[in-house]
Image (cartoon, rainbow, N blue to C red; front, side, top):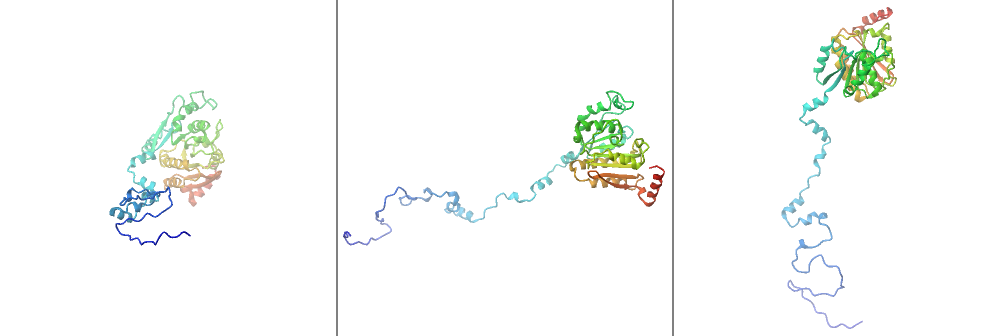
Length: 352
């Protein structure tokens, strides 16, 4: 061991006396603080990002210190509502735009629909809230005649060529109204061209659901509401039960969006009082059925039966609750005990 150079002397450390420089191993790493006395901390370099220590950067100011102690407001506080879109929809001050969106365009195929005899009924329908009526064609025009393959038919212009001319306007409608020869020729032609894309249809006299010279390609997903009359000459020599059963047989076996309203007292041209009472409800049923396709619009059907309640009209309401399965609801005075007996006696005589 080497001898000591001499006795060690105590070193007095004062406030104004610098520390002795002790021997140390040289290194390339420099201190985070400057060696100059009085260096400011804000100029120091730190290997830790400031964003990870926000409280240290604000400690120099009392204002920032108090803000650091205060709780931060929650981020995205407006997203805490469980129904943000519903609140905005209710607060929208545009009732008129909602009414315009709820208005449905009803296209009436004039030939066969009785727009002349029941003109007041259709005019009243056009003024009803929620409906915008549009007449397509007119009765007794040059094209208002059966095609050549019908008895006493004629070449174009006829109802089949007329169907091609109004197809574009008919396809833009929300619902169709056809009657008599319009249901026999015009609607089947639209079904042949466009299939289930054809709008829902109210079919007065049920022309497409009877034996005609051409085969009707009834779409499986077609939405239809047939209005049949017990005194309609379309019934021919069939009984009421046979007439309704024959109409049901023409509907596609897989269809679940078809209804039939059979009224014993209705003639080929529906009475104005009857048509005015049932047509708006039949349209609403078709419009409610179209977007659902899987569930029966029972609310609209119930409203239809309520409109017939207390009147002298009697008959049956039938609708498909499932593919090939029909449900039947009778209405009118004949559903009482006395009424059932009168119906049994009429059936024995071959009447309605």
